Length: 189
Ligand SMILES: Nc1nc2c(ncn2[C@@H]2O[C@H](COP(=O)(O)OP(=O)(O)OP(=O)(O)O)[C@@H](O)[C@H]2O)c(=O)[nH]1
Ligand SMILES: [Mg+2]
Image (cartoon, rainbow, N blue to C red; front, side, top):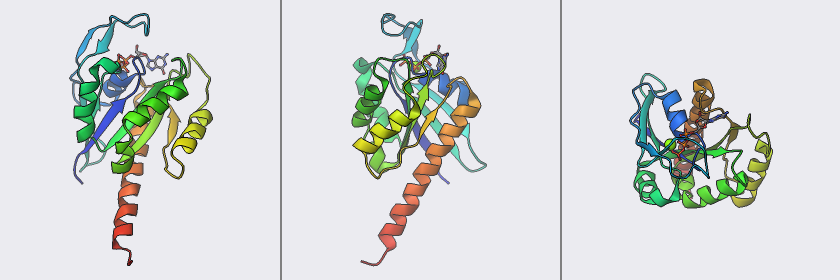
């Protein structure tokens, strides 16, 4: 099986860098700089270019993990990395203002990945903000993308087990789509 390329996207402070650090088998390449927007998210640093890590999910399959900056002023990095990715874990911090709307905005920016690969929505910081619940994210997805399976999970990005589950559900989703499209191509007209 060839390597997978997976993107971690989502708003500032959602836990993209944290998730890649929790998952990666190798030392993570990170590009953190001082956070000048501490009024938006109060943490000392923010990603300015990308994060890179790797994880082996089976003997044959290595997954390349790329994290993008959450701040929109680094959008050019989104475009570069998006073109390489087959799937995406969209992390959404449940304590952000209007997190379901934030998810919708990010999905509009990355909707070509829905056609090409797959997307899983991973809701973080539910210990800090328990509402909205994952059902509300799922309802919004069903409205925007009826008939397309986009799993929604609550995760703690610091927890390797949680992030492995999100990653495996994404890979499962991508492989299922590949099988379905291969089956559709071989079906007689
Ligand atoms: N309590 C709690 N803290 C969390 C959770 N997820 C992430 N964090 C913390 O929230 C912060 C997230 O920071 P980052 O991982 O830098 O976020 P990011 O998405 O990479 O942000 P940018 O690169 O700035 O866009 C870290 O301090 C994490 O430890 C969670 O589920 N619960
Ligand atoms: Mg980051």
